[in-house]
Length: 321
Image 1: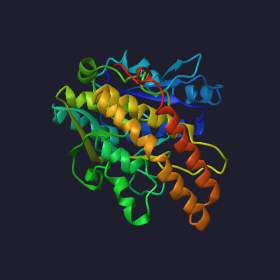
Image 2: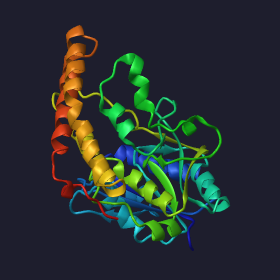
Image 3: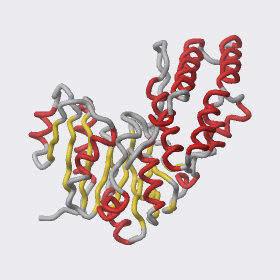
């Protein structure tokens, strides 16, 4: 029997989260049929046998080495046989009827190539999940440490559609849950695994290519999902945030791929030239004790890491489909 929706989930050694995610999918889905795949990302196998017994219909792929976000999901996307396909994080809990709603919305709106749900934090608050495409201005304000009265400038990249109670066309949606058409994948291609092994620029690129191909990317708030990993946490250990550094490296790659050499060069200049200002602001915060000293040190180490990757040759930044 053919299914309506293929769901791709990656197991990242979080068996309790993944188990609850799978339970919530089956518990909340009533009107469509599912083909669920789990990619085991070279974990130690903890909890896998139990999940295979509890969810016998779930199909498993086992990696012999750890792969990134795109490379993992592409293993399923490339062989899906359903009209609709979903990439889903393992740290999600699906609310009642969410996938029924998303698939129904796609069926009723043939011009929509990708759709995302309303994402909530674990406390039920709205999570940022709809965004505008990056520009030099948003990157300038995003990288800068700003005084409180200017901090709102960091939100220029957010699309306020996420506060609406009706569907809206947006630039890009968070990759914690994206439902797309098989037809869209055939036209725009898979996720770009060359952009980043760990960060989130892949879904920005995927949505950008979808728009470029003439499809609409939409936010559908009637479908609700709790994304447990949605809130960033400050580390209590010294050192730079390597994931954030990697994310900024891939932003340079995105600019080079879609906006051209000059834009990528200017973005590098922003990441480098703002370092003295950020050092001054962080020092002031540490001296005045408005921000914990360790947090300031970690932030500065991270900004130095971003500056270093900005000096790498451009040829390292160019992604492909």
